Length: 111
Ligand SMILES: [Zn+2]
Picture (cartoon, protein in one colour):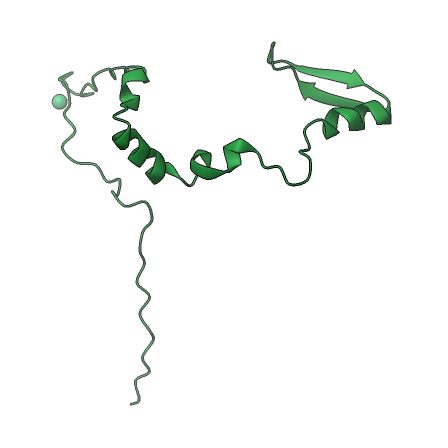
C-alpha cells in the first residue's frame, strides 16, 4: 500500500509504501480502547467550555494575557491624496456574531 503524508518534523509531503498489515497497525495505534475518551474532548478541555475556562482563570487568579505575545503595531494608513495619516472613525463590522433576520409573515390583502 502506498500513501502520502506530511512529515511533522520537516513539514514536507512524503510518500511511503507499507504492507496492508503495517498500514493498519499505524492507523490502529490512534484508536483508543473501548470506554476511553480523549482528554482534549472531555471536561473543561472541550472546545465548548471557554466560559468555564474563563471562570477557572478568574478563580485561580491566572492571567493568560501574560503569556500571550504582544501584538504587532499596524503601519499607519496614509491618504492617497495628501499622504496624511488616516484615522478610523467607524467600522461596519457588526459586534454580534450572528445577524438576526426578522422574517415577517406575509399578510394577504383582499381587494
Ligand atoms: Zn488626504
